[in-house]
Amino acid sequence: MMGRKLLLVLLFVAFSASLSACGRKNAIVAPEGVDPQYPRTYPAPTPVPGEKKN
Image (cartoon, rainbow, N blue to C red; front, side):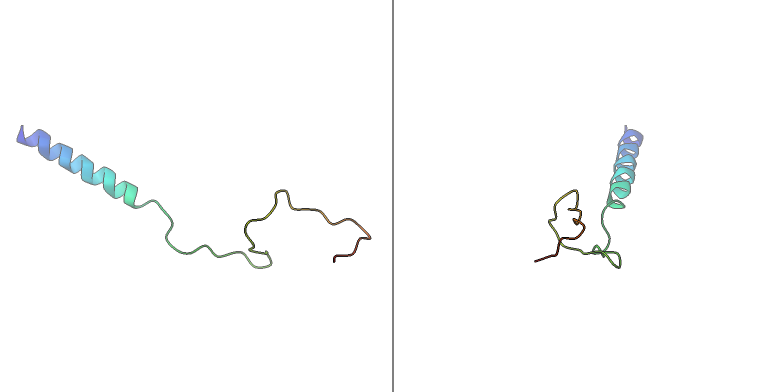
């Protein structure tokens, strides 16, 4: 009976340790040359040739 409880405890520790390894580690950094604005429309609007921005 004691062996079964020890096995359950070891399995619980192993599963919880594997779950703690998942997740975000650092802040998200936008790549260079990309506008990091959020929220944005999807798909991104395509510019019309010959039209000026306001």
